[in-house]
Length: 474
Ligand code: NAD
Image (cartoon, rainbow, N blue to C red; front, top):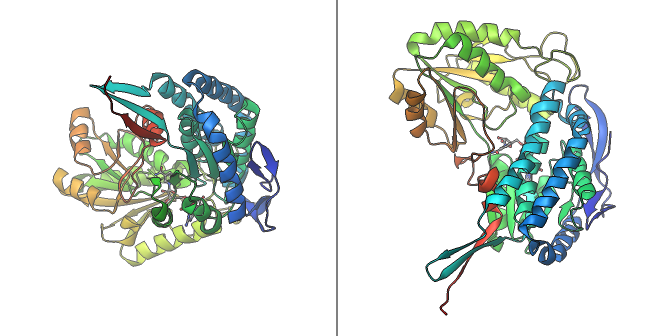
């Protein structure tokens, strides 16, 4: 396994200015797999200067040059797929199946969709006598979490490259190794020196040096709402644009005409995929009062059928949580919910049988959950589902919207139009109807405290562009 002990600045791997490092732990074994250097504000400054030096020339490249560059990145990325998957298994415990398909594929999809968006985008339009131009915003600071590393890094790097921007990436210090592979891919694909730079480190030091840097024009941040607030505060004095992709607490409204026998195992699998560590996980189930017993019976058997284990083992569906801190938080939330009156339908506190080492948790269903409980309001980020009943559709929509978050909603129904009518009333940036599937042609992002940015396709591209009006008459 690689280490993350060097930074990629100005087209080459350079030594950090400081000497601090931390270990990257394999969450299945709790053993160190690598070390990561913690950068300093000086490292960030060096990377920003490299990005600034590259900006003028890179931002002037033609659309076809940038399309060719992205196509070359796609080829090199594909050749590194196995390496990406193996690294995901080690640094965040993703099961082999998920790592090599959904995780690797999602990163690749961001590059391919960025190519389409770039080919189709109108960078200049005439409005009467005014020319409106969309220009590269400049030097971008990109900050990402650890839960879907190739996807979340590519969702920023691909549109930023497409837009003609230069950038400094600070990936999560918990899972930094995929970012090293992405840097190698970009290097091999011929991304010009200084266009992409990588500095590892923690949020308060490296993250905030980037967000507050006077020569960074824009910050694209994905992470928790708590850190997003810090990012906005730190970026405010320099009035830079901040695109935020933050936490969620997504409700899944099951309408009374849903076929629960098939809906429940599907939705259970969707929530538990990636060990429940997805920002849009529909883990807050809202169920008609009249269907509660039926839902709980299916949910119990679906939860008990999920195979938890080591990422490389055949048939394993969910691996561990990412860290001891994540494990402790999920255990605390489950216990607090039970103390507050929730009942355990499946799973519960403690470890799955036979998994005494690693941050494994039991797929858990909690019933008798009311919306005022902490478990119904806090993002859990684990394979834990809460079940709350509703009296009628208005009540379900009220409960779904009763959260500070607004990332995603889910609706299950046998009637697509009925589900879409509910979708229109949800205060969320996305609604998944009948399953968690999504399409990179749509926009990914949230309302309320789930953020203000939009990623994927031309929506992602627009985040990295400024709008200029050229007024004038012949
Ligand atoms: P986190 O907020 O702890 O960290 C995310 C990144 O921000 C890391 O790189 C971290 O080092 C950095 N950071 C932390 N404090 C910072 C600061 N003060 N200034 C600058 N950078 C700082 O989140 P996490 O635990 O890595 O990820 C899980 C969270 O991310 C969840 O809340 C999840 O919902 C959210 N998430 C959102 C989306 C989305 O698209 N909306 C996608 C994935 C994850």
